[in-house]
Image (cartoon, rainbow, N blue to C red; front, side, top):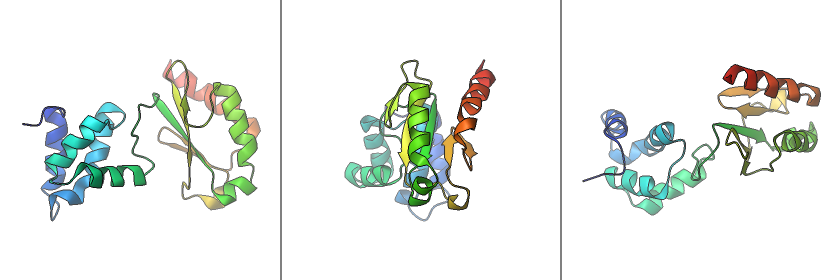
Amino acid sequence: MISSLSDAELADIDKEIAHAPYKAAVAIDALKIVQGYRGWVSDESLQTIAKHLDMSAAELDGIATFYNLIFRKPVGEQVILLCNSVTCWIKGYEKIRQQISQHLGVGLGETTADNAYTFLPVTCLGACDKAPVMMVGDDLYENIDRSELSEIFRTREQAQL
């Protein structure tokens, strides 16, 4: 009996399994499903998913920790992913990182006290031709200019009211 996942989570995972050649083939999808419901993937959830997919927890954890968009710790309501690739470094990453940290009052890897944002580095967002780039939630911001950061946060915060 699997108890740490909801019926809805298991049903969504089973829908993916129905289209896969073998259960473990949906490992990333299963992790994303659980993260979608819970915001992150706990150790208990990971073990239950692994058991449901007939995999070892260590094998599934290796997959979960390889993909930087699977969160293994609780995160804020919105996650800010700031690209720290070479291209973004050349185009002003460090000054943007400093400005975001100053605006939020947290460093990389930290969550704001109100749990609104978690600020994380990411190796690549696949938009090097538009560096520097960051994602906030599902929104990609390209060619970030430091003068635009305050407006980006102000607009997002007003949209949440």
